[in-house]
Amino acid sequence: MNQTKNQKYIETLNELGYAQSHSEKWQSVRVGTFTSPQHCLRALEGMDIRICEGVRELLVSGQVTISSIEREIDLVAIPIFRLGFSLKRKVRIKTAIARAYKLGLLPVSIEAAVALRLSYKQTTIVDYLTMAMDPIIIKEVECNLDMSCDSWGEWLLIRERPEFMESLAVLVFELPRKV
Image 1 (cartoon, helix red, strand yellow):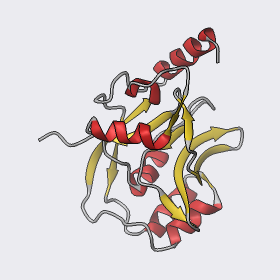
Image 2 (cartoon, rainbow, N blue to C red):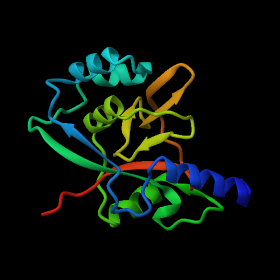
Image 3 (cartoon, rainbow, N blue to C red):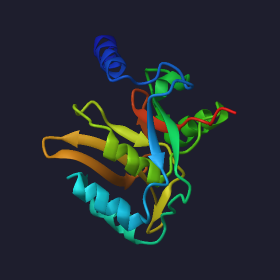
Image 4 (cartoon, rainbow, N blue to C red):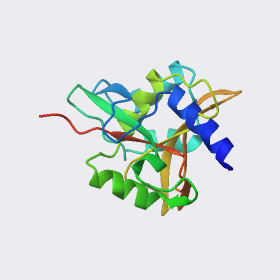
């Protein structure tokens, strides 16, 4: 991307309300409201959210833990370059997530990702979010949850975790609770 395209994309990210810094709250979601992973799946289907087969399999596999305590958590959606990386290069996703963890950000749970997908309405294909989480292992492959939208609707996807991401890509983390 050249400088003009980068600037236009950054303006779009700003319009979507993404964080200027790692400590800036973007959205809040409630966890502990689902009774089971299957309840998560039914809620997604009931809201007409498009779900890839991998997400469906994950939610019925028994690998997903649901919080038994209802609480609100704050999330930050931050472009990778705002974690201190150059706009001019791709960044290892593990390096970006490790830097965010050092800054105090926390991984997003699958339950929080489902709650976000149910509450956040995406309006543009630029609005593509990768959940920053410990990798989901499926058939010995590291995977991630992503949120996107296209002409078919809003999606919750599971895909193989890429080694590198563009520095303009947006990661979603949980903000630590203030004591």
